[in-house]
Structures are given as structure tokens and as C-alpha cells.
Image (cartoon, rainbow, N blue to C red):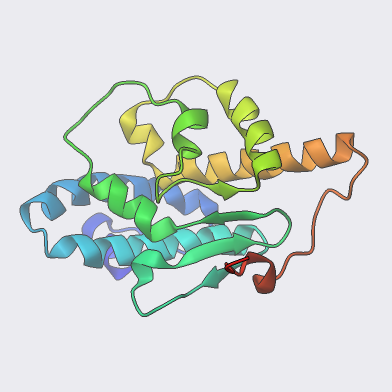
Length: 185
């Protein structure tokens, strides 16, 4: 938060409305981290954890902090089986190539299975992919903007809840961290 305040003169406060400020900061920081690669993990951790906290405060979820390295921490959601790594997403945003403006498909790219993708149950993945496919492609900058990713998460949650409602199921699950344990079974 101090990095952003020093760079842009704006104080972040964990509200979703501050994400466009973070988007702008990351776009500026992308150049700096490409020149000073040692800064990449510091900026990715700082911005990723802030981004994750914005999401956690908006949606019932918790951090899974396996290990000391925040790069691999994930948010896991209570109402829908959805996991997401905000730090990996920010790291990808910072380390992408220069200014590619080709369109990005939100459905294909957000659910692709790469480390920054949304991890959903298979049944939910199909309905989310169909909903995201209805949206227009976005630029590379928009795709990697935390504000866009929050919208994608909001849409994913709404799509899963709509599927459940149509199937006569409870719209929100009551998952807990144990439901996300990765076993060998």
C-alpha cells in the first residue's frame, strides 16, 4: 500500500473501487520490474496479497498459506468450490511481454489450467466458461488488470449460483478449508 501511495499519491483501502489504481500501478511497475528483476517478487507479493485481500473482503473466502512463499498462497471460496492465486496472477501481469494488444478470450484464458487460472469443479467450469464466452475479448492490459479479474470472479460466482438455482440446489455451499484438502485418493 505504501508503494502505491508513494508512486501515485493515492492511499489504498481494500475496497474494490481501488483496484483501477492498482491496475495503473502495476502497468507502471511492469517496466521497472523488467529492468530490475529482483524487484519482481517484492512487487508481485505486495500487490498480489493486496488484491487477494480485496477479494477476500468482498466474498466469503480464506487464504491457504502453504509454505512461507506468498507466491503460492491461494484464496479458497466458501460458497463455491473456487480457488485462485492472486500473487501468481500479479506476477504474470508484471512479467508478460511488452504491450501485446491482441484480444484475450476471458473464458478460455481464465480457466485454462495455468497457475493464474481459476480452479473450479468440472461441472461449474462448463457453466462459467459458457458465461465468460458471452463477453467480448479484452486487451492484454485489461486481461491482466486486477479490476477485470475481480469482475471475472464475480461473474464465475454468479454463473455457478444460477446453475444451482436452476437445478433446484442451494445456491451457496458452506465449504470450509477441509473441502479443499488435496489428498492422494
